[in-house]
Every structure is written in structure tokens, then in C-alpha cells.
Length: 116
Image 1 (cartoon, rainbow, N blue to C red):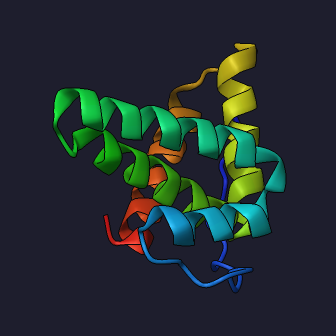
Image 2: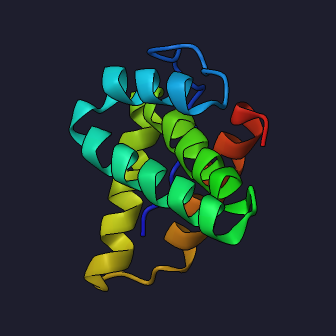
């Protein structure tokens, strides 16, 4: 795999929203409207699971997952790079070691950006 030089992060398309279902919903609707059905389904499942288990853990997981997703998607160059790395891993035509390491770095940066 060709080494990827980190580029300065371009200005985000939207500010990082608060880590609430409502704010994340607004961001997902703005950035990737096609992902709204998955967002809503995940929220319903997290809410149902939280009620059944009497635990906030499913909702925390939901907020973490979608907060990282928004942090990645709000910077198009980062989202595009992540998709390319995922293709490298899924096709199996190249050694995925470097791609996996970079994917982890992207996720870590997104977690930090989201305040997670």
C-alpha cells in the first residue's frame, strides 16, 4: 500500500454537534441523509435495549458510534480516505496492516474531536 501523508484537516462542513440524539440526527441529516434510516434504527434498538436492561450502556454506545461517525463525515477528505482504507482491507488484494493502522488513527482522531 502506498504511504499516505496526513494532510492538514480541511475545515469541517458542520461544527461538531453536541453528543445528543437530536444534535447527532441533525448532523447526520445534513452530512449523509442516506444514513438516517440506519441512525433511527440504531436509536430505536439502543433505547429498547436500555429499557430492557435498565442500563444506559446501550445509549452510550449509540452516542459514541454516531458521534465518531459524524466527526469523520464532517471532513470529506477524511471520510473518503477511510472508505479507501476499508476497500483495501475488504478486497484483500494488498497487505492490510498499514490500512488497519491508519483506520485506527482516523477513529482515534474522530473520538478526540467528538470529545469521547
